[in-house]
Length: 331
Image (cartoon, rainbow, N blue to C red; front, side):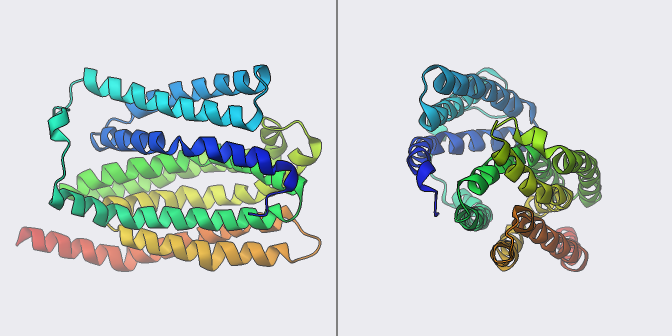
């Protein structure tokens, strides 16, 4: 990853601790998906909100009081993830669900597992490879030195917050579309996609404005180093453009996932990552003087490509499949 030597030990410690939290991330997503499938997005919100508060105070205690640095921040993160899982499980045991939760119900079912793998494996593969593409971009930035590396690291934290809205709407879209697609209410599915994009787009305009014109204030939340804040803001200006495009294609991806078109989502995600994001970021890093803004443009370029592909697929391919689905159901 070409991590700067000054940050190598802290980075290794952080990753080592956070790796133990992967099991809690998996469990939380599993339980959260269960609630969203039932149409209840409030309980996952409550669980993650409590965990976020614990994470914030845990970071302050571990870093500011115990002076444990990056490792302390990682411990606070893992602890908050574990608590979110415990909270979600306790809620499951104490609320009325349309089914019982018992140990004897947890067993292997070949046909169900096959369906889950068929739908989930393409998405898992896509997420993994898209993550790899961002690691490659990070590696390119790391080679520029400590300040650009730290600046992009700060900007990525801000971006993680900014992308919560389109990501959440995309997840909600997948659950809602799946319910209506299964009930053959395709008109409601199409309306949901339109409304989801409209809501996401309006919120994206606000976040884009904040990122482009006030990114220094957002970055200063995570760093008090003027050089790091300036570098983060420069990179964040490119993400301001990405806010616009992700508000569209995250919802469209949610729509396709809800319709079971996960292989298409995988294909366009991987293509956007390795045919657009990685090569564009590499080419921009070779233009002198090097600009983090230009390198950051690789991400909105990839998102724009994915929007175009999604619109094409929706108009010319997906509608034909839906007609075939309705005709076969009637027969």
